[in-house]
Amino acid sequence: MLALTLSVNAQSLPQKLENPISVAYLKENLKKESPRLVLNKGIEDNLRKRLKTDPVIQNVYKAIKLNAESILERPIINLDVPLEERTQDNQLDISRDILYRVNMLAMVYRMENNPQMVARLNEEIIAACHFPTWYPEHFLDVGEMSLAIALAIDWAADGLPQSTIDLAKRALVEKGIKPSWPEGGDHSHWAYRNNNWNQVCHGGMVAASLAVAEMEPELAAKTIHRAIDGMVHALAEYGPDGVYPEGATYWNYGTSFSVVTAAMFESAFGTDFGIADYPAFKESAVFRVLSNAPTGLMYNYGDCSEQRSKNGDFTLAWFATKTGNKTFFEKERFLKPPEAMGEVSRLAGASLVWLAQYEEKATETIPTAWKGNGTNPVVFFTGGENDPHQYYFGGKGGSGSVNHGNMDGGSFVFELNGVRWSIDIAKQSRYGVIERTGFKLWATCQKCDRWKLLNKNNFGHSTLTVNEQKHIVDGKATIVDFKTGEKPEATIDLTSTFQEQLASATRRFIKDTPTSLLIEDDIEITEETNLITWQLITQADVEIVKGGAILTQEGKRLVLANLSHPDLTVSVISLDPPPHYLDVKKERLKRIEIRVPAWIIKGDTTKIRVRLSGE
Picture 1 (cartoon, rainbow, N blue to C red):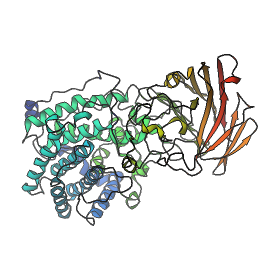
Picture 2: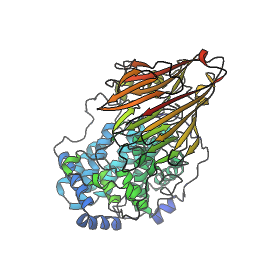
Picture 3: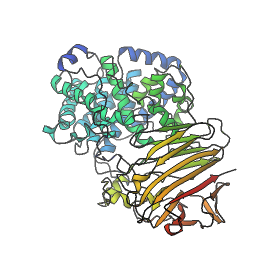
Picture 4: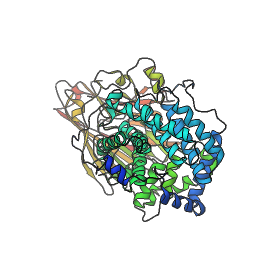
């Protein structure tokens, strides 16, 4: 799922976490008995108590048990898995499968002392530990596998043969921890980077180190010490307001491993060394909630999916537990019939622990106008919880050079009356099939392959394009003004996105009525400016009318009014099929354009004003 974009954290000196880890500290402070990873005696006692009385915990546990029982019907984990279309040329899906199996089997064993579960868990551990490697060339695979094996032998230690535990510990050292250090292969590039790899790989290495601390105290201590020092480079990316630069899908992925790491530290040492209170980390839960739109889709910028999970968000629930905020606890989704939940999150077993720790303390209202700065700044306007118009707007700045970034500065999604009118084309889910063609999906130079794809370049986003050229990949669009109130607005400076194409450009979004969005672009041209194209990406049917267009979709209408240049006729460009054979294919996809030639601009400045209004 997640290829690595090696961009360096702009914050060269992120705030550090408390880091007392040494061999002596481990010997003195690490809990001696198992379980000690996410669970310990006190935490487990609380879980068992809540399992008897709490309908949410009972319901989620039933879903976990159904999943565990279904695993018993499958073959033992193995490497002979045929590549699916989306699968990458690595072992990541296999590592994720074993992490899922461990979470289900080991939690049911832990709660019920079920011999069937531990017997199957034993077979899974032995099979995984006999893999030739855990694929350190793609270290995410090692991170997820290490977490799985460490949790398995920690949670089921009293039911596993000693030979299996010994085998697992040797594998954690030789196939997990040692390859993370340069002497075992130069795969440590993730350790001080600012992306989800940092979070996932450190999480796996912490779990492995805690599992083998008595056997390899020096290796364990230096690995945990590196993790606490290295994690801050990813945690700093949530600053200053809680925006996760890689988007909502990757927030769930990266954050879930930081959350598990915090939970392991708390259970093993009684402290998380400051992870939960790291600046803007808790605030990121607000960003995550705002990324959910009324249609059920997400604001899916970057490489994110537009579909959210049908089940409750386990990662968000950790933030509910830490804050007591009911808004972050998706109770209704957790109470879905267990049979309807299907295959639950591969971290559901661990997540059950903090679900059982949740106690409601307050219900904080999510703001209806919110902006977050950082390396990939975003802004949201909504109509609030009971809005009859289901108003939703998400816009962004940023640049293509951020992790999983696109040339989408100034782009936006817009929903009204239950319809998504302006869309962000869904993520490229077929990473594997793209990479196997030789296409360089992850390089981000100005002329790199990535920008040939419609959902990566600016031609596939609701933004501006100048001279029919691509955005400047290193140019960063920033939010320079933001106002709340009855008519919230946000202004994004796009100037560096159009270096040598424009002298300056700002885009202002205004929620001017409860059913409309006004977009104002103030532009200063240069001698190099030939054409400015205003774009809206949509799946709606479009009727061109005088002064704009009428969009229809799902029986609803939206009027696009060209307020500034009503004499310019709107154009509609079909993107079904899309221009590149590797592009995401979406039915009825099209780009609405307002093309403003430089020769009609009087002087050096112009303003493009477009209103989108519904009923």
